[in-house]
Length: 190
Image 1 (cartoon, rainbow, N blue to C red):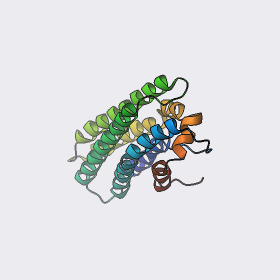
Image 2 (image 1 turned 180 degrees about the vertical axis):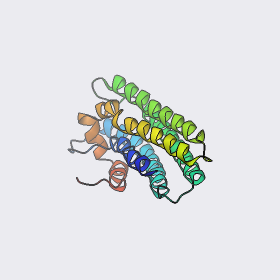
Image 3 (image 1 turned 60 degrees about the vertical axis):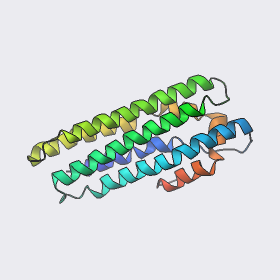
């Protein structure tokens, strides 16, 4: 019943990975400082999202009660909402990166992160509202949530990708905290 939810959720981790570029090493001190500030703030949030994903994956066994699933998913969605909000705040606090269109890129990314945060908050409300006494209804409700999650994991990171193009991505890839965030997120393949 909850397998589809777990599959959809693992897509959510992709959003954070968009926050970790890879690339060259032409140093730019001002940009490096900006990237360090953002990466250092993102790292604990990436861990929080990873833990939330793991909790949901763990609770997907079919012998979990609807109450257990509801409680775990609700907390996980709240954690993810908080994490994306914190990442948005960090990008906002860092100010615009010193690149062409830096201000627009920064504002678009903050707006996108806040909207992802709001989407997870809304999923939490949905999961909290499910009827755990009726297993069939609960399963149907979870399917709807999995569909929303799927959309959420597919939509979205355009503004983040845009923020991390070129020099910004290169500066971020030089930050140990961004490299660690990528390595620990359990990506498969390169």
